[in-house]
Structure formats: structure tokens, C-alpha cells
Amino acid sequence: QVQLVESGGGLVQAGGSLRLSCAASGRTLGSYVMGWFRRAPGKEREFVAAIRWSIGLTNVADSVKGRFTISRDNAKNTVYLQMNSLKPEDTAVYYCGAGRTDWGKSRLESAFASWGQGTQVTVSS
Image: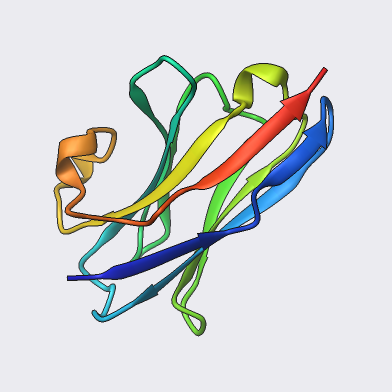
């Protein structure tokens, strides 16, 4: 099991930026897909972005494309979500997930076996 700890959430004004971090431990991540999902109040958890750890291939939801970027640091075993041009509708709890899954399933919540505790992002208008 991979242990995941998110950090970097907070309160920001619309148009601002935040960088979320997800530190992983307990497993070598070479065969893993790492993902970011979010849950807004009253809504289902939804896909935001994913990265295949071994080759750095990325996948980003249409709703955040051009504003959010996912990346990883091999030396720190950490995945990042850089969020720019934030909007009030980006307000949510953001979760980091890890799964040994096919890339074709990287947008599916069910493909991720390990989750962090979540970090709150609030964007004020």
C-alpha cells in the first residue's frame, strides 16, 4: 500500500495560483499512475489530472486544461498539481491517489487503490 500525504491547499482569490504536493511512501512508484481528484460541496469526486510515474505521461480534465499542470519529482517521490488562473468553481477538497492501473483507466476513481486525506482549496470571487 502506498501512503500519500497532500499539502499546499488554502484560500486564494480568483485568478491566483496554488501548488499542491502529494508525498508518497511505502512503495516504489515506477509501475504506478498518480492522480488528482477533487470533491466540491454537494458533488461527486471528479478527475482532475493524472501522471504515469515511469514516463511522465500526463492527462488533464478539460475543465482545467491550460490552467492546471501535473508533474512529479522522482528524487522526492512527490507529485505536484500547479493550479493557475483559479476560479471559484475550483473550490473543493483535492485528493491525491495512487494505482497500478492501465493508462486508459487513469480518469477513473476506481482505478486508484490508495488515497491521501485531502487538502482544501477555496477560491474567493
